[in-house]
Picture (cartoon, rainbow, N blue to C red):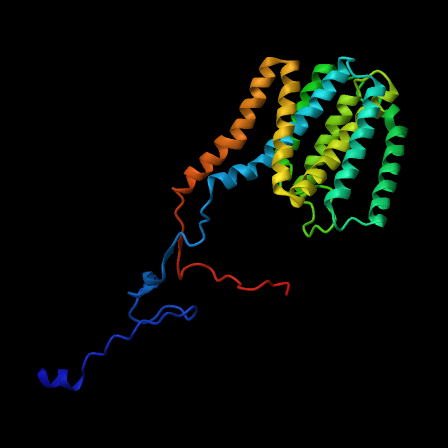
Length: 303
């Protein structure tokens, strides 16, 4: 018996190798891992440590645009109550348009005379078409009740705020590398439809033209103007944003005290509470990376 064992020694177990393909290795299970498998494990390698003040500063852009939409709602309300007539709205439209072009001239280095002329021609065609379509807008929802129009308008504005691109502009800024996203276009369309619904409740064609021009100026060009201010100077952006918040809260307070409390609470929630919750949730984020992860390209595939 001993001689037989000496003549036929037991085969040695093959060494396990780490291979991507090739199937099962003899003597090992399909899910076998080597002793050094967990040595390459890395925890929280890609977790970004966020600063509370930086997150609060970034959230100011959201609060700023909330105030812009609130101001649009105030103008709509005062117009429906006949506190603003056609002449006042037209003066407001001209003032906004002039202020917007002035901001672009002062903040954009890549804004040439040809580009400015291109903007002016587009706005001229846009204004002419809007004036021609004003009678259609005025009678568009005549058969629908005002309560239904108000509910749909508010819903569209909420959708607009939910899908709005707060980091950029739907109108591409001069020199911008990133194109507007699909959700930003959906957000813009929702605001335009809301403007049409609201304008359809006004009594005259000139009223409809003036309020539509105001609404589209704000929803189209206000994000572009605020984006240019932010890119030009972040400190100027903060000053403009807080001034806009103060003015908006003052006007809302004159309209209704409860709306003032709701808007103030919303601004505090967006600017303070949400950044605080984000920072606190970062403490519980746990990410594990290791040799089991998919390979990632270390270069841009477009290069």
